[in-house]
Image 1 (tube, rainbow, N blue to C red):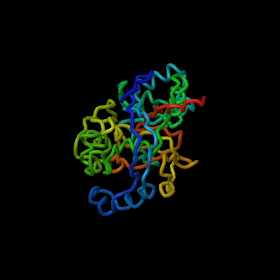
Image 2 (image 1 turned 135 degrees about the horizontal axis):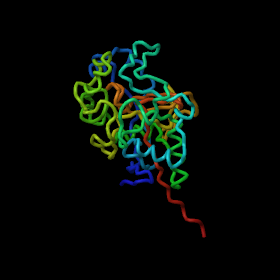
Image 3 (image 1 turned 90 degrees about the vertical axis):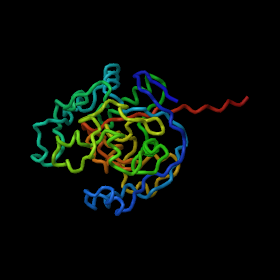
Image 4 (image 1 turned 135 degrees about the vertical axis):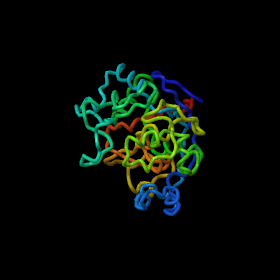
Length: 314
């Protein structure tokens, strides 16, 4: 069942259900699957364990696609909202072919912050049907609040548990298609032979295949998962509602976990067009401050399904 909102966002109804969240194969298995990575990359993933059963008690609508440039533009024009990279006067990050990461202190893959970069210009061409990027967690909150106010439905970011449940769509493997990272080339827009030549220092970590896109792809360019959702992996990282906690999985409630009560960084999920296959897994957790803006990071929204109210007593 799908539903379309006032900005043209298509939402898919995700059923209630139970799944296993988190958990990792053994270090030996990971080393066989990702032979070019150092062992410490596997042993450092303490926040992905333990695997734990989670129950999503209510069905919800989730965006069939990531929020697009065109949809975000219509929101900005209709609301008058000024996205955070513009409002704070520091801009965003972007691709510049003359920029060399090796010359910077952080070795960042992208140039910035700089005023010329924003959701309007991440340094590469985007159509209206590409995922919006260079948007902060706070920008995602602003969009959800505006939609809630103007439409009378409750919009929000998905919880981290809702996101992983929707990504897995009944699977328990590293990726919805299975455990072979090379299968991503046919299933998602991640770091591949089309993109790697622009970052030769990381080329060895690219997929062997070619997914057809150097930068972002039009949303829905790849087949949906079993829930009918596109691009849950790759294209753009997606902000979720939760604060991040390294040890949260050890104490997470079984029913509808909401994440830690407070924190310093918010979780983002799913990987992007620039993400190595190891980090574009259903279970991988990344995080940034709510003010972070980057040409790899976008969003996908939930629209809650109103629950029927019990009849009033006579």
